[in-house]
Length: 109
Image 1 (cartoon, one colour):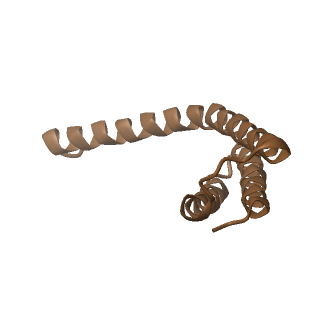
Image 2 (cartoon, rainbow, N blue to C red):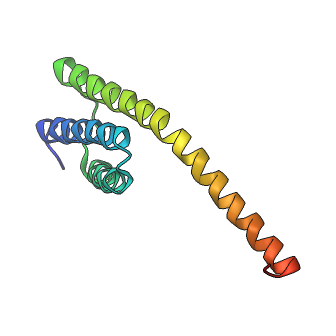
């Protein structure tokens, strides 16, 4: 079982990683974005397994709420940055699939 300080430290680490994810997305550094996302997921797994079930109170609770808000804000920024790229990738994949179907139906030219 984690101490409340360890829980807050984990949330702070996750918030820092999500800020780094925003920066990676701004640079279109998709490989680094994925690596950072994996690190956040590892922290989430630790919290799921070890975070105490009793609710926090006072300043600890407020700090946890602020860190979660920071992560949600970063997540929104990441989505705003990645959605155009994902749409472009989807178009490319669809075009490749269409090309493949034409080649299969009619043969290569």
